[in-house]
Length: 348
Image (tube, rainbow, N blue to C red):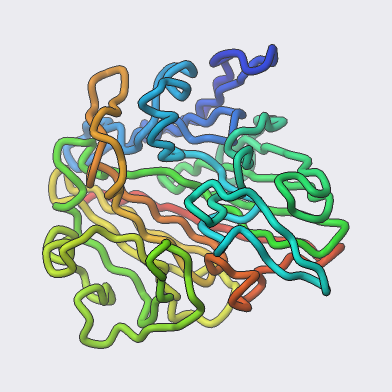
């Protein structure tokens, strides 16, 4: 188990550090402290080949190209103070109305114009009994992007010897505030040899949240019995895409009724035999199959990104939670926010 730290670039005259966590099985996780962003995950497949399985770039400058900035896919970023969309970029809290940035039509997306994905985080690497880790910290100030309260956030990224990648989030606010953050990595378990439409997926969720025409959740809960997008049994993504005549951008509500860590999903690629199992303490997931990702984007090595070339599994509280009374969508003053999501990689 090793940790390597290098200077990845410069942002506003500050050095951007990249941390490479490696285990004895050859798995690597690359994380930079700009946006607490995962830039690369490499995993051995069933044939022993080390495959790049995430969308990202090998140079810092590539995150600022016109094609990337115009498409804004948030590759690998930590997004917050409140991820996903908040309807009409407003919410009502403790007798007061708050208006935040309209950066997705009339809605607010992933915290606003300068969310956590565009901030420099403090970072420190260390070893743990589980494996190698890097902990990143951020101070989010009162009324930053229109959100009340000073919030201190920490994220610990851990790579274990068993090819498990764990993300542990903690936060504390001095005022009540909407709060939920997630990681926005796009995965392709084939190593980009095929699109993710060939992947098979199962998600332990019998319900989803309704979304309106703007992409904001309305608060209505929809049962999935006999629905084409019911993923409680393993289904090929392309077959469901064809049945829906669309890609996934669904918020699934897990069948577990607690904030304990439980396995909630399995995604597998027939090409290369790599499977990813997901366990989380969160109540649901935004499952997104990259239907808006630009085909102009690719890694410097030539790995092609674009529509249906990567999927996101964004575990977090309900989108638009402050307006639809989502569970634990408001972080209470002096109450600790805790959340864990773990990705386990297996070969068949």
